[in-house]
Image (cartoon, rainbow, N blue to C red; front, side, top):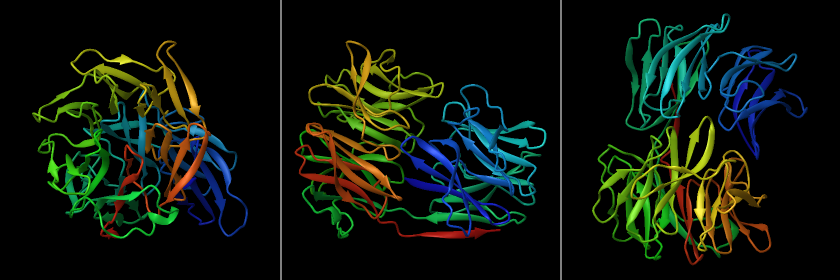
Length: 475
């Protein structure tokens, strides 16, 4: 389990926080200075609830999955455990981030309908009146009040290197802070104009070790890497012929797809989008000449590796991500969200209308060598198999928990997957025959992405060798 979003009550006697279980996020309350176990309060969905105390007995939070209206801002009363809706998002829209004003009578929050854009609102906590401020063409999670509640600050850009301040009364905007490395806005001091940011320069490299290595191998790993630069490289994938490793890299200043020999030699760039598209995830077709990829805007494209040309794949309106090719290479299977539900869809590679596959949930998909569609579901554990003849799914590995890591690799004998453990990741192998999981590795860090070679002799993985992170205070 993983704990996050700590918030101390104004009098310092109570700590509210979120804990992630297999069934998602649950909020708890701990009485400071006691040995009393934390008390379970309420569900809060798969994302950070952003707890903000209003008084010593009430706090606000956001929750996509809630005991009340899903996707709304909520008020939790400690004294009677009552939950009250604060905001009123229309059906299919979600309030995803929230900041309490310094004097406590209003909140600012972002609302989204398709998880691609953010609409900034303020709400009067006494009357419930909502005021629309401005819309932004990407998701924004960080915001805070400052300047005696005259300004709302947030991080508007995808590279997270600029802090923007907006006056909600006049609409006037200005750059409040800008840096060459990315940062996260952590919040501000109440009754103060001081803000805290976490400033960090990332440098992720790609390593490889034999799968037969001891459990402690990742912890004791030397610094040598098969792919390394002064920028980040991640998401390694072995080509089906077993000769090359592809990966994502930002060494050009943009996120592009690269490829290298398995020993790290002959690194070369496959895509060249020049900043017009940023790749988030990708997969190869079985012929090895095309790549389906998802952008940070959650749209899906097809890249011809031979020509370098790319084209957009038709998907239902809303989010579309995590594309994979069918065994015949004739369709691309992906997950899409409509009305809050994630389902698997497929679209012909040559073009055409998307067709929905699952109806009871579907998130990340893989095809076995025998052609079976194996997949996970959003915010829940287990692996599932889809039967195209009956249009139904069957849970085949209920004990596997890939949420919230979502890293798993399908092989003939079973599935390799990452599991969250106290802020770190443990790598397991689930055996189809025995229906048991075996722990392979523990990591002293967050294992961002990994790949298992086709012969199951090596594990390729991304390791964070960050140059460090600093907490900065701005005024």
